[in-house]
Image (cartoon, rainbow, N blue to C red):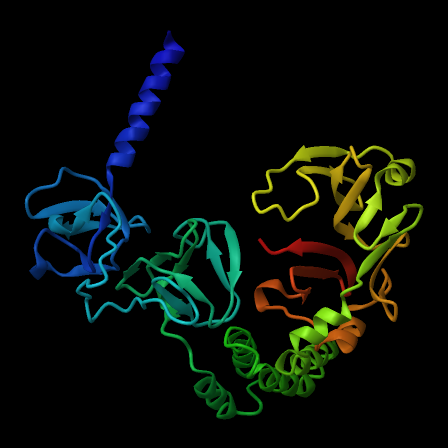
Length: 391
């Protein structure tokens, strides 16, 4: 009986919490008091979600923003659902940007390199992710105070002072050019920002940015940085001048794997020889495949590979595989990737065939007509290959 009462209480509590959340149906501000003349704490964009902390009056409601800041909003702007009206009157002073080529929703851009996003709105919060210079992030509420915290979705928080409009690469490059030659720390800081901004601007500035970084690395005789920067310069060449997609598709149209002791045909393996060689999988699971892109909904997990399995046909399709002394990835009869290839060697050979991003550095994608392959490197050497199909 006690459990039943507890369940009912929890259900009612959850229902009340859900009822206390509302959406703002227009741009508005979070005011200090229930009076527009008493100043405000920050800006909301339309459809920002707030928690209503007190009963709504005719004119004002006491609410909490997504960064836990409390204040007042006009009650007339609160709604139970999103506002899909395209003719919303916007606050011209609101710094939050609308969707553009870089982000589809309301957002701002990161203005420093390697910014730590935390799990709580304080410096003690766990580091959730590292954001890069020029990366767009979702913003629905922005405080006025520069040191205040902003929720950028998924309960990740960064300080207001690190967000603004999209940084300009040419302006930042000019800043670097005006730094004194002997001010190495400042030059390195701006060079790192240029590199991250170049990644988040498309590939056009990438080579220019890495040349700046190489300049700093050479002046400091930082051999590790020189080596990695030279590798990325090679990558930048390929990314800026990629081969036509039809050329890439033809290059890998017969791609396959070879696994010691296992009968393979392109991506398909004989299930009996897998079991004879590697034994039973350590895990079997069924995964719903709504797109129908996998061979089967049944997946066998081995230490060195994952297979989509059809036991009735005694066949399986390779989903991903760790490359070791027992396996290789064959792009075509003249291009074989085994466990000894380094990231530098790979980039020299395939920079014009691959795609990557700053969010997925050390993972390189080769596309075909229906999906492609993600080739992952760890500690400078190839680690694994994942096969993916587009839905």
